[in-house]
Image (tube, rainbow, N blue to C red; front, top):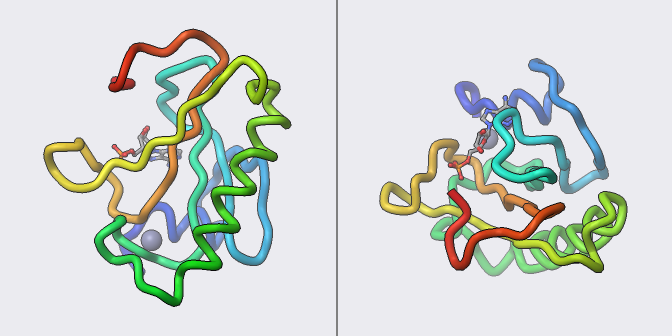
Length: 115
Ligand code: AMP
Ligand code: ZN
């Protein structure tokens, strides 16, 4: 997707603090962190949000969720606890329409909502 900022990160056209990358996904630090640990995990494929997921994405999303555990361990928040959030659409405050999981932790988080 030409105008998608996260596709540009995937293509290394704009810089990001990348913490993990493989053939299917990439994880990088959120530019405006809402917690001590705030990492974004995204599929390399441009998928606008949860509504656009299809059956063929099952393996990709399973892979991403399992890797989120590894990234949480890498960030030392696996034991203390963390939150994985996907914002979908206007009321959820989605700003970037390339699906992404917010990995938040490193301190006590508020209940239910994170920002
Ligand atoms: P959302 O509101 O769920 O769409 O979240 C978008 C997130 O992307 C926000 O937390 C932003 O701070 C973050 N963000 C936007 N641009 C960048 C960027 N270039 N690098 C890292 N994070 C970004
Ligand atoms: Zn994209």
